[in-house]
Image 1 (cartoon, one colour):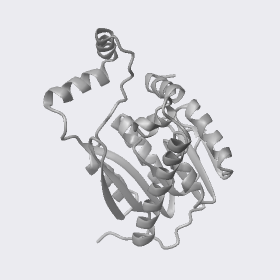
Image 2: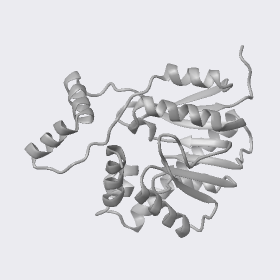
Image 3: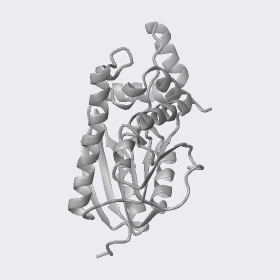
Image 4: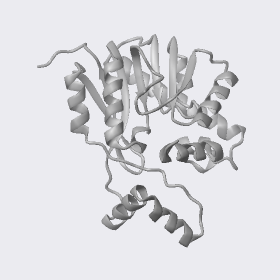
Amino acid sequence: MDKIEKKWEYFAKTNPYFAVSTYEKFKSENLDKVALKDFFESGEEYVKRIWRDIENNFQTEFKPRKAIDFGCGVGRITLPIAKRCEMVTGIDISENMLKEARQNSAKFSISNVDFVKGDNDLTEVTGKFDFIHSFIVFQHIKPKIGGAIFKKFVKMLSNGGIGVLHFTYFNNQPSLTQKIRFRIYRDLSWAYKLRNFIKKKNELLIPMYLYDLNRLLLVLQENDCHKCQIRFSHHGVEGALLFFQKGKETLY
């Protein structure tokens, strides 16, 4: 198990819902029936917005046969997607997240979801898919690895299939000193351990990375995904939700 996987297993064991959506009410010590209801309703509202954009701009009455939700966590977005598809594959690096997602799937009586362990090579994922989705996940993966996964997903997309994948690309908030400090903590584990020792804390740092949108767009162009749309996001850093369809448009 590598360092990143260990971190996400730790989050899954201690604060699985907060790790997905970082609001205080979703911390394990605050999580009650009302907070859980809000948590899953937020996933349903997000998917409604995604579907509206797809049906308004790409394909009316969109109903994929096979779909992927990459970085599925406890199923906040996977389960609403399952209501709109024949079969969904939820992928996550954490076995504990997958365990919680399976329990939530059973709780909501959703049976058309297969939850599988993720790795850099997508070993457990084969075939073609009509819809591939990921939100606030790639930002925690090194761009070299995430870029390779992105290429594999684009190749897995069926002709006419639609991808909706989120990437962070710019950070305008912290000072230069803060940026340098974060990179040191992110890339040098001993430095963050020393920081915890000095502060007498036991906190894990969630890694954050920025992607080059030019490289991502080139991958889409090279793989016959010529119809694209971008929705911007802001979660502390600037993000872009890339909507794209394979093989439905030609180059100008």
